[in-house]
Image 1 (cartoon, rainbow, N blue to C red):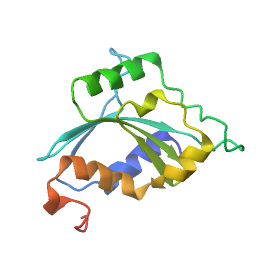
Image 2 (cartoon, rainbow, N blue to C red):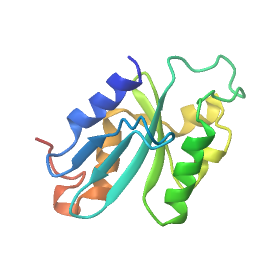
Image 3 (cartoon, rainbow, N blue to C red):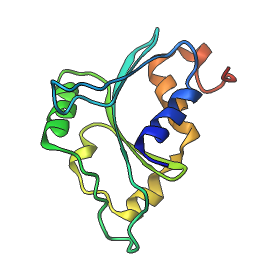
Length: 140
């Protein structure tokens, strides 16, 4: 799996009432990878996929976030927009919000806080959809 297939797997799991936009902007560097919007709210998401976690628990993950990507996420946060960094490893993910993307993330922190990949779409839906469409209901 790579970043593109990871994002595609999240998108396939999203409820039909969430509009998704996979962003590929050649003119503005750092723009988040995806934008989601639904009747309840919207979300900007930057994705990073790591093929393998480091061997040692205290080793920090190499996310490869550019300065422009951090600036975009911080700007969205400062403007009170929902923004996140979603780090994927195999079939798990870690969702960082509230400027957590500025912190170092160790292997142990990732393992202690990661969720199954399939729950990423439920988390996105919890922001974009009102409760009747949320986690408690079956997806299409």
